[in-house]
Length: 634
Image (cartoon, rainbow, N blue to C red; front, side, top):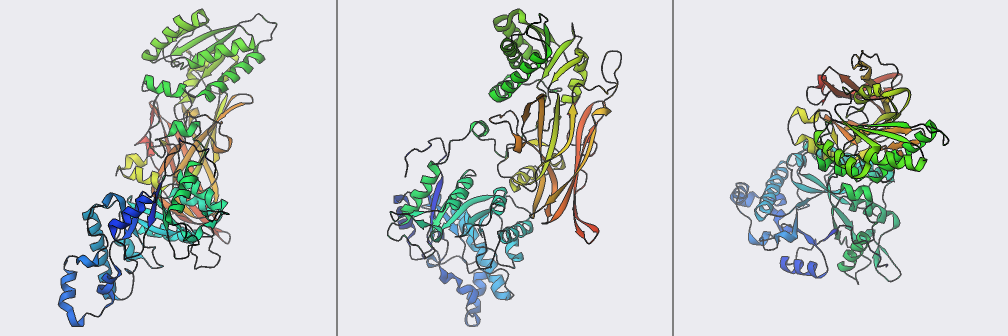
């Protein structure tokens, strides 16, 4: 094995699952530590404890009723008997508990036994609890659980030709019975044969806290040590990005008895250390994965210096802007001309686009006169410093709102960075409509256009984050999110676009639009859903043309490599909808306006064909009606 490991990859937690009941807890912990494991999974009780479920009690009814009334464990019933090693333990609930049997006594006693084990685990302060995989009938089981790791095999190996959806469907039904409880997590058990990639990716949207690795899935290398197949390695590496714990357990078929559990642990850590170093976007977004952030309100609020600083660290965005200005200058004026091109940077912030415009002019060998327009009084101080210390007479700075300001002359090129994650959600259309009066009739706007895209997504993580607020407002608010625990149910589609300059708007004597209705939008897009899934909301992206062939995008298929200024936007659904395979999903979006604000409304409708008739089976209400919960102030 190579030693060229990446030291910047977070260390993965690796545990071991001891199912043998004769093991002493202290000895098990010591053994696991000696072999490099971070934790162990142990049964909470001995199998003898199941006497309360299956033994006839006619001869000792009083003892049984005392137990039902809450008599304590007997010491010999317990494997985990105290909290001495609690930080190192995950407790396992007994497999023989049967909450959905038709036998009333066994069902009742199972629930009592389950609650007794939960109570003991809570008393000890165990980090987590592993519970058995649900059977085909599990309604009572679901009613009894909340904060646990549920053991879910990735495929049902007892079912011929299992395609990987069967166990996800079972898990989904179970968590639905539990009202999508945020403390219900998955211990995903890998199998010898993994399903196709499309089914594997579905699990990335689920709350996986642990990955169970039975020894039977390991192959043997030439030196006799356990290794995983290439497909298993690839899936495990993807899972490691979500930082679950990994647990090796002996399924009694191990081909590597001679090397012991230490070899498995070392191999998992080897895979972890050999992962590629996080790219620039991953480094920038570290700690922000699946974290809900409210979009900026750049017209209502003045941005903080730290916010500008974060955006200015993106070299890709500003390189693209410089390239766009460069080509615009080449097209605008010939090399032989002595004509000076007027560039106006609106919303100049602390000046990065001004600097890039100067660089583009020097590279193009064109004469320019640059204006920098900014309404934020704090950022304007920085612009004054830049003018005196760096730019000099090349730049004239103007203070004021671009929609109301009067410029000293018309511009050949209007440059702005007003785009939001949804393209228009930071009011770029409204701002550039107001600034259009600065532009000559044949002038160039950079950007010249931008398109907005949406796609249906599944993410129990994001849904739980929103639902934790327990109010309507947060379900009717879009969020900027660096997606991680997300599965796409269909590829993104375009819903609308904006172009600049806009020659169709009607303006007043001051050159401003008479109203904002030309910036309203409505779109209905239809997605074909191949595989079933839970719809938790929509992802939003933009793709922009800065100038001719110079584009800038956060759309996954065309994402500008290395650019991290924007995360996607997330529009949540108040109630998740189960979308069946081979059905259609219609998503409706509105961009609406008043004299004081702009807002979005959205809803969905799922349907399938029965002959020639379309049957709707899942719809949402229209969310954020009238901008009652979220809006962008004008």
